[in-house]
Length: 481
Image (cartoon, rainbow, N blue to C red; front, side, top):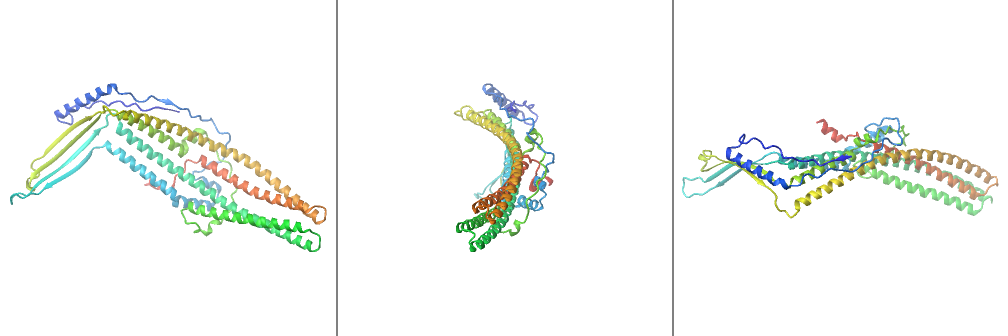
């Protein structure tokens, strides 16, 4: 995309004598003419340049379902909806992002303050008693100052901070989207860990029953001792895997509680839930629409615009500054005559940089380099957004094929293990073949469970990559006010 630095031109000089008295008007006119003369040798604003950001015409795949703003509601999981509401309300990282946004907004207001005159009140008093008739000296007044933004320097800096505040708001929404994705992933990983633990418990029961059968046959001299030992090892292996999964489930539960802003171990009912049936694939829309929708891309664009304003301000720093000041005061010996006489003062000053050791030119170079960085960062963010969508679409299709293949493998492995078991009981097969077939079957069952979870995570990644209209509750409340 093409961007260019704003070119600042001095505004027309206002008609003399409309506000100020004649001597001051003459002074301002002379100072302004002198400033314009000094600008004759100043460098103009930086030339524009272009860094292309390739935008594909369309994505390689898409779906038909509409993506809701609250994307997780597409799963139809009431428990997940409750967890998301709690996280968006209580999560400490999101609250920190909100405070950063408030800080950026306050910084923008500070940067915009110099566009208006400043007014200060002052009071001095001195008490001396050379005689009983004197009360002392009192001095009261008001002083105002104002810098005329001839070249747009103050406005550019204020605009830069306003853009950064807007970028902070976009980053706050991006943080909320990231948080919602982390909550969903952690929640479904926890449910998968519980399902894996249940599966391992069933496998352990099956293996223990097989061990009891072998032990009975061993007493009748029909089974060798090594076969008993191999089966005992399989039982212990299944138990050890169940313990590992149980530990993983505990860690995931703690992780989820922290995301919810809770202390680990404080929500014992957090384990209830079932894995979802995935809804249809959502519509991806056009890549150009994604660029406009995603808050992280918007934040990168706004920071690019802020850097552009910083560059304009750095260029304007090399031009003269015109400052106006005015004051009104009263001074008297004693409070009774304090407001009898007033002193009014109005002045103007022009400050032009002449020799700064290359500091101002270096500041322009630094601002221009920072602007180029922000442009490249914006392009990188756009490309990353496209990549996230394409990666999720690619994994979605491949994962479905893997699930179909694993389901067939589980069916074949289960049938083979059952047949070998019968053949072994009839003396037509070796026990090692039976054991190998059973181990393969149980491993494939666990692999199928893991791949189904991976498909849910892929869908979450796709929803996250496409999300953009999601507005956190705190921001909604502020916008409503």
